Image 1: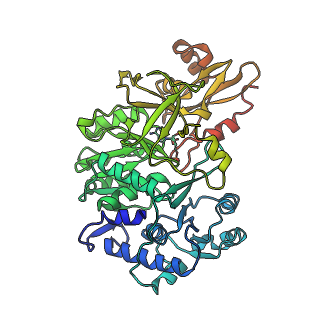
Image 2: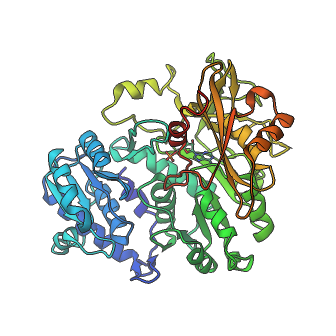
Image 3: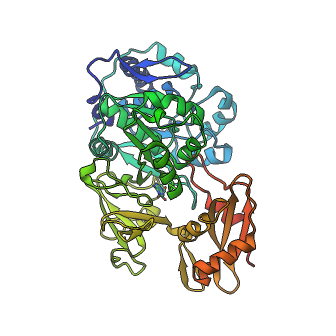
Amino acid sequence: MNLYSLLESGFPQDRNTICLEVPGGCDRTWSEIEQGSARMANWLASLEIPLGSRVAAPVEKSPEGLMLYLATLRAGFVFLPLNTAYRDAELEYFFGNATPAVVVCPIKSFDWITPIARASGAAQVVTLNEDGTGTLMDAAASQRGTFSTVELADDALASILYTSGTTGRSKGAMLSHGNLGSNALTLREYWGWRGDDVLLHMLPIFHIHGLFVGVNGALLSGAKMIWLSKFDAKAAASHLPSATVMMGVPTFYVRLLTEADFTRESCRNIRLFVSGSAPLLLETFTEFKDRTGHTILERYGMSETGMLVSNPYHVHEGQRFGGTVGKPLPGVALRITGEDGQPCKVGEIGLIEVCGPGIFKGYWEMPEKTKEEFTDDGWFRTGDMGRLGGEAAGLQVPDDYVSIVGRGKDLIISGGFNVYPKEIEGFIDDIPGVEESAVVGVPHPDFGEAGVGVVVAKPGATLDALQIQAYLKTKIANFKVPKKVVIVKELPRNTMGKVQKNLLREEYRTACL
Ligand code: AMP
């Protein structure tokens, strides 16, 4: 089934109600979203490009950007959202790999993007600006406001999402209409989405979190979204009283907590706070609960798989445990495998492997890479390390709860021993005056690899690298203590709030030589 048809089945009866509330802009009704996407779909269809052609969209977040996504689905093409922060070398790579037939970009980037798009064979390069103007809109304006959504099989491609590439070259994850639809249906049920929900939407829509978890969830439930082009703690605090659901990366929650206007009162109508895309610090989880009375629901997923694991929403499903990402969602099978390929026991750390209807079809034009990432019996290797059950945040958690300990590629093997950065980061973060930390592995002449601790101080605090090492030696085995500790102003993060450990590894590559 075409994903759009599935989403449409959840639209409210009265299409004249508001779908997108756009503070400082023009609100859009459901009918306007339907008509706007129909006009764009008619224009795309008029290009007479084959079904399955890619529509690349390095555009700013806007209601029209959302319509473009829906139009692409409706017309049977493949949506390729891209961060507008990408520069020419990056777009050359993405366009070269995905060979889009249509490229949509803001007018301000048109001059430098057009030659790159043309060189990769794009037939059309049109503009769409943040304010909803552009040549795409001009072309769509003369099209009909109705469109018969193209019928497609579940395994037809709906989108290609390039992975964030924090551990290597970005790869295009191919997601089918069935993959995205099944995940949206599961989350609607599991998180109790309702037609009278109001989602405070502040995430970008070039990423799975904002687009598939946020947008698809709200559309499928007929729920309104408060549509902010980006996150700003002050604006978030002011719109929260009108919302029932907020989704964010951990940084959103950290920043909200620094906002004086963010109070228990401002969350009075919220029924669900969701965090994901990067680990939520236990400190944030606890402080948030103390401040608001709300327990953030942390979940885990990735571009290649959709959402896999979630803390429960309904009390009868269980408790939300800080430091865990919850239990496999209905329909998801998850196992933890040791380096020897054998299943790990409860509490043991290993590689997370998954199966389920949301798992992608493979990496675009990379059959070898795809093969490597699946086991012989068809499970996807997430590349994340974690454990089932055991202890999280000092509590014994049930055996079906998953705790993530980090990317497998972040694992440090020092003198033959495994060092899990997250464990060491937890000890460093407990030191008074430490805001946050990241531990990365770098080459070491004796041990092969050694950890470097990169530490950020709380505002006004002074830290001493040698004292941090001395403290760690009293807490953990010597082989786990970073051989070097550096104090920095901030950690490099990508737009989804993920710490870019690849950049740190590069920066401190020679620190232990
Ligand atoms: P992306 O494909 O950009 O969404 O990145 C997916 C990766 O983000 C996963 O493989 C994890 O490494 C990480 N991730 C997502 N959610 C969480 C979470 N709740 N805790 C820790 N890591 C997470």
